[in-house]
Image (tube, rainbow, N blue to C red; front, side, top):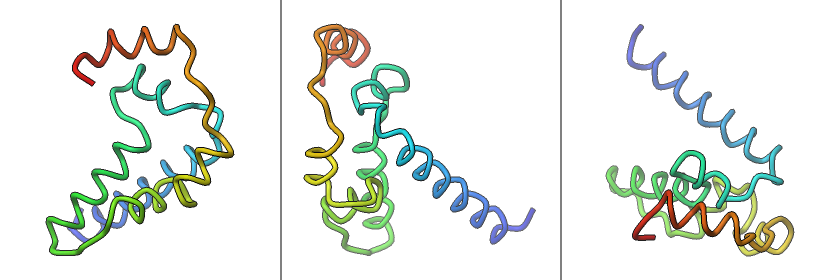
Length: 98
């Protein structure tokens, strides 16, 4: 496989991941962190870091909008719920130091 095809497939996969997360707004970031060790915020941070590595300046909110499909504050207001004690306990066990 040539590099351009690989890049296109990786980009398509990333777009599909974002679509899937958009379709599963019921899955909270804490759930993602507890199960996988990363969440939407991590994806947006990685996006920003990739841009920075290429000399492209993207602020945190712009990177989050790419991942969330809307301004982060709007997503939080519409879809984020308060974490349960069980979720918080699981987070503290699976992500020490956070």
